[in-house]
Image 1: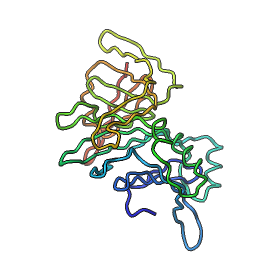
Image 2 (image 1 turned 180 degrees about the vertical axis):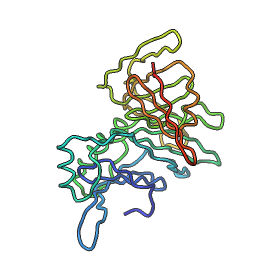
Image 3 (image 1 turned 45 degrees about the vertical axis):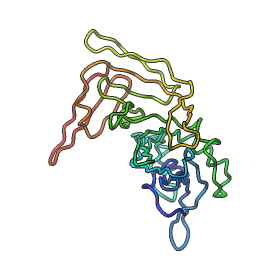
Image 4 (image 1 turned 180 degrees about the horizontal axis):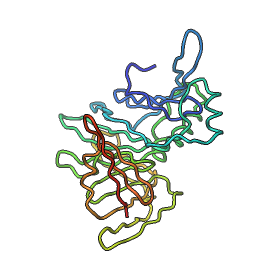
Length: 266
């Protein structure tokens, strides 16, 4: 096991697989929860390298988010849950979000990374569980999408926020990002609040950074954005949000009560 890690993130409930994200080691450790005497422990399956860094650069992972996915109520899932040793939920997590902060020459720069869990697990299974290290070039480009975050005058996106199986990238205008290109979107337009569906982005995405060995990173994970034109500034202050094809629901938490405000997305 590595010395320190960001909090564990469950990525495969049925097989008790978790990911440990190590900013100081610039890698993701994929582990399996094993139940044996004298107690449960984590078995390292493999290490997935993050984009290689210059010798004097440092990577700090300040946040890890995952899609909010409702637990399935299907009877088959309930039966499979009873067969598992650990009562994890049966719901699937399709993507994770990492907030990456790079430091170099007394300057910092922030980036977001969306990771496809299916691709990540595929890379882990290819290691045959021998705790080997898989280079970034073997798994990272097709499994991830890296983009700059807006901070300190630098252009980029806001910190991505999970909203059901989608990600909110901006508030004004509201930009909802979907990494499942098989999902069909249906939007309606009105004179007051029009929505537009962009064509899927499938071309490689390049970002420049002096902290990376090659001076840039190219990632290939496709996505598409839905842009809703209208006043959504209140989302900046809500605690959680859920999105489907027609509705956007924001939840605000107060000290002693909570409010639920909902409205049509398009």
